[in-house]
Image 1: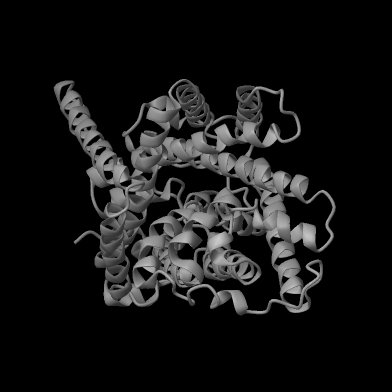
Image 2: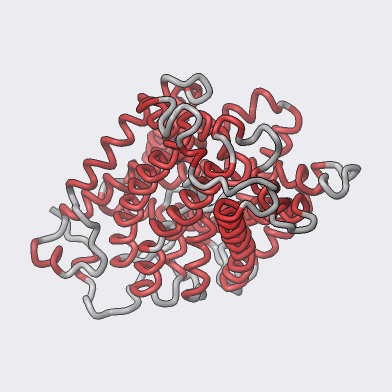
Length: 474
C-alpha cells in the first residue's frame, strides 16, 4: 500500500512542501483564513432563502440545521486532517489523485471547478437585482459586468489582496447577522417596537407544534439546508496559501460548527420566535422587519448592502477557488499547461482569467435563456456540491489506509470517530439522494447531475486515448 506524504513528512515541520509543483505564495494570515471560513458558511440563502426551508419543517428546521451542521463539520474535519498534513492548493483534486487514483483526481478537480462556476454565475446575476434597489434604471448586465471586472482584478493581485477583500466583506455579513440576533432577542424578551407583550418562545409551539410536518418535514428540509452550507470547504483551497497551516487551518475548521450554530441556528431561532413559522417570508424579509421594529433607520437599505456584499463575496471566493483549481489541474496534467502559469505576484492569472471568462459567458446564456440554462446548471451545481463532499469523505478513508498505526498516532489534526464517522457521512448522503428524489424541484439535479458525471468520465478516457496516440503519458 502506498505511503502517504503525511507519513513521510517531518512531524515537527510547520510548512510542508507542496507535492504538486505548486509555487503559490503563502500570503494568507490567520485573520484572513478565519474570515474566509466564516464567509464561506454565510450566503445569500440565509437572508432570503431560509423561508423555503422553514415552510418544509416548521420550527423543527432547527433540528435539520443541527444535523446538517454536524455532517458538514465531519466533512471539514476529514478535509482538515489531510490539509494540515499536506497543505497544497487545489486540495480536493490533489488528495483524490494521490490517495485514490488518476480518474478521481481528474473528476474531483473539474467537478469542483464547474460547480463553483455555476454558483459564481448565480451570484453574479443577482448583483444587478440588488443594485436596482437604488438605481432601477441601471441594466442588470452592466452591474454584473462591473462586478466581474473588479473581482477579476482583485484576484489577479497577490493573494493577500484577495484575503483582505474577503475579510472585510465577510465582516459585513457577520456584523449584520449578529445585529439581527441581538435585536431579535431584545424584541423577544421585551416586546420593544411591537406595542405588545414579549412574545417569548410561544411561536415555537403555537402553530401546529414544534414539528408540525413530522419527521418527514425535518428530512425534506435537509435537501435545502445542506446546500446552504456550500462554500465552507474553501478552507481546503486556502490551505496552500496559508502562512502557518498547522495553526490556522485547525482553528478555522473547529470554528465551523460554532459558526453554523450561531449564524444559522441562532438567526433562524430568532425568526421562529418572532414570527409564526407559516408566515415567514410572506411580508418581506424578517431581517428588515426586525431592524425596523428596534428603530434602525433605513433597514431595507442596510439589508441590501448586506446581501450585495454576500453576493460579491461569494463570487470573489468562487473565482479565487476556480483559479487555484485550474492551476492544480494543469500541474497534474489534467488541464492545458498554460493554466498552471503564475503572474509576478504569484497569482494563477491564466486560471483566474479563464474562469472569469467562462462565468461571463454563463451570465450571457442565463440572460438569453433563463428558463432552460439556469435551472439545469444550478441542478448540476447542487449535485456537484454533494458529490464533492462525499468524495472528500471517501478520499480521507483512503488517505488513512496508507498510514501505519504509528503514523496515525502522529497525525496533527485527526478526524474524530474515523473511520466510523466517515461511514456515517457517506450513509447520510445516500439518504439525502433519496430525499431529493421525492421533491420535484430537486429531482432535475439527480437527472442532470449523473449526465454531467458521465461527461466528465468520458472526457477523461478520451483525453487518455489522445495522449496515448501521441505517445505521451496520461
